[in-house]
Length: 116
Image (cartoon, rainbow, N blue to C red; front, side, top):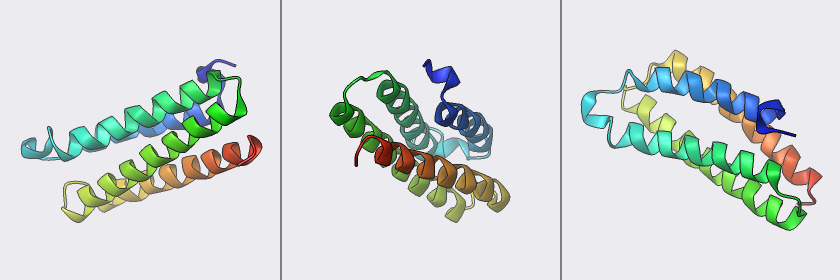
């Protein structure tokens, strides 16, 4: 199954598109720090989701899904920090938080399916 057909990857793409727009509200001084770190965590998560989908072995797949989950947690913390520093409007934070929660549940289900 190509990552384009994987439901979690589609959710990740939706979140990525929304996050990119939301990060435009960050001040210039944060574009190469907090916004860049948030973007790196986002791309790491997407890469891990695509890699895990392509892997045949359950043990390796589980390890990569766990990496995706760690990137998700890191991104969640960075987005929360953006909101606390008033770079990100609360409404956008709420939407992103809901997307993060949904993807987190999907990653948890995926981990269970590979025998976590």
